[in-house]
Amino acid sequence: MEAPDTWLAARKGFEEAALGFLDACTTLKDAAIRSGASLAREEMIESFTNQYKPVLESFDLIQGCMHHSQRVLNAVANLSPQRVPISKLPTEILIRIFPAFLASSHHGSYELLDIISVCARWYQVATTTPTLWNHVDLRTYPEQIYEDASCGFGWINFFLTRSRGLPVHFNPSLDGRYSNDCVMFELVLLIQNYPTAVGFIQLHGGEYYGDMVSAHYSFTESMRLLLLTTPGTSVSLRSLATGVLRPALFEHLPMWPLTSLPQLVELNLENLAEPACPSPSAICMMMSACPLLHTLQLWNLETEPCGRLPSSIQLPNLRLLDPKNAPNIIPLLSSRIFPGTPRLHVRLGLHSSNTYQAPDAFRALLSRSNVSSLTVREIYELNYMTPCFMSIIPYL
Image 1 (cartoon, rainbow, N blue to C red):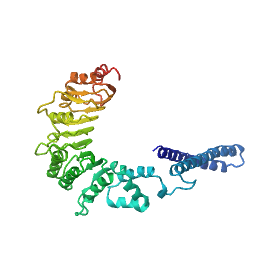
Image 2: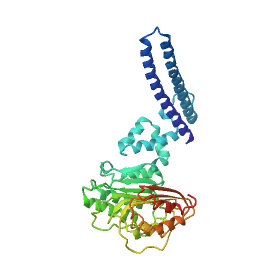
Image 3: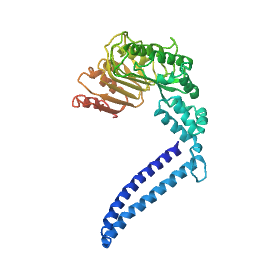
Image 4: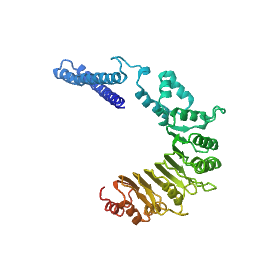
């Protein structure tokens, strides 16, 4: 991908040169107006000439950037020094354009057909390049997915088929306005049919649900079915993110996964309140079954301690620890987490005095970890907390 990067850098240089050209044109216009008012004055003619020189330099710079960009494209595509049509762009560049195009659309069938109508090679690239389909953050818009009731979740099946087993990102919309029960049910079936195809799941609801029954079902069933699937079955989920489920009007406590997620490498829980927020024991049990976990982010969690807790949680691959405003969870985790030897990046959100109710436990966690960087946000207690932490991190 070095050649496309060089091409993009050349394009940026061209854009900067174009801006310089516009500035030079404005200056030239002003100089011409001033000199035209008194053509007989030699100093005004000299001033006009001096203002004209930067314009010539801008033209030369623009021309040089254009030739350089063309040479890069020709070298990548192995073409003669001519203009390169989109149909002849190399696959490396098409691969970059494809995810960006889908990320800006609603991932409907019509948008994808537009790609083929612009360039017939899109179809060839799309069918022979599995990596195209696992880098797309697929948002499930039910009004588009179910526009043909007979196809069901066929469009997502299409993504999974094209990816050829590579993990696909899923970002279901859980806002209570659509048939979330159908979305989650179909997604569960996909995981069961393609146990190694789903690599990222993000459950993200709005601040307010118009249909609380639908919202309750979506989140509860997503935890019970989506992550548990078949009891005793190990899925290949690598990233789980849940956030902004704060209304706290759920009737029943969601069931969090009790089976092993051995491939999980990222866990992000954000803005959760009871009963949507998992208990500290549920979080500890989940983490203890994820030996490959390298990213742990816990933000704004409101829950009460309950249940049994493991005596220790071994996380030998942990590289990022990002706690913020979770007073009933952080102290319990601090005394049980044992990171490995990799360098650990710690980010702290010191929002209030009760953020870390057990500073001794957290200091002990930092002292037994190979902390290489410390980021402190929302500093309200700099004089008390930060020097205390820094004094026990020898290799910061």
